Amino acid sequence: MNSTLQNVKTITKRELAAYFTSPVAYVFIVIFLLLCGFFTFFVGGFFERGQAALGAPFFNWHPWFYLFLVPAVGMRLWAEERRVGTLELLLTMPITPWQAIAGKFLASWLFLGLALALTFPVVITVNYLGNPDNGVIFAAYVGSWLMAGAYLAISCMTSAMTRAQVVSFILSVVICLFLILCGFDPVIQLLEGVVGARVVEFVASFSFMTHFAGFQKGVLDSRDWIFFLSVIAFCLFATSVILRGHRAG
Image 1: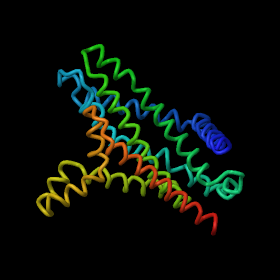
Image 2: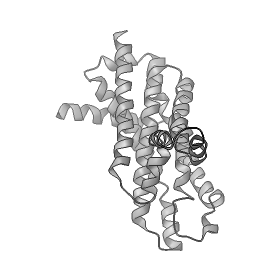
Image 3: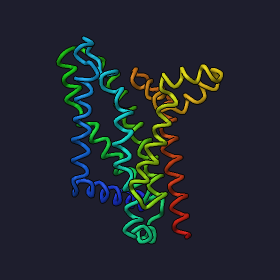
């Protein structure tokens, strides 16, 4: 057990350090922070609402930001290893594929958590202007980070499928877009006119929007936790199956 954790920790540290030795991390963080600030204060109507709350003007945009930014981070996880021919070397080292997958995923997820934490000036601003419910804000941050992890796990899976990072990016964007739109209000209203309410409810239950909505309200529902963690677990399992196939081949 100790050796397993040590291997995962070593890979996580190596991958996390690799982000900050290239411009990728800094470009991602700057773009993410600029988007959050612009859409919150200028597009989301933060000041026009006259409320000390971050739900609609800030967190409502996160699923859409992650749709493109997270696949941009995750597309290189395995595609780059395959492109430069280091995947076989990595899998022949004294570590298991699961340790490599967990280490790479945790490094990227921690990086996304850091980018999310750097939006703290928005929280300070809303507390300066009013008296918001910081418990609700904290719950929404937790939900946002879990949702980012689900996006990332999908990107990790698509990255293992191909050595072309662009193909991995497109595949993950398409999958994530489906998981957003199946719970998007206009899509739900359209489906309600075509199929029954139970079918609509079933389809919407797979949506990131549906499960993120609870966190935005400050509700830490176990069903929402389980949904995001299940998506992460399933996609990482699928990644291990894909990598084992490459190894066997």
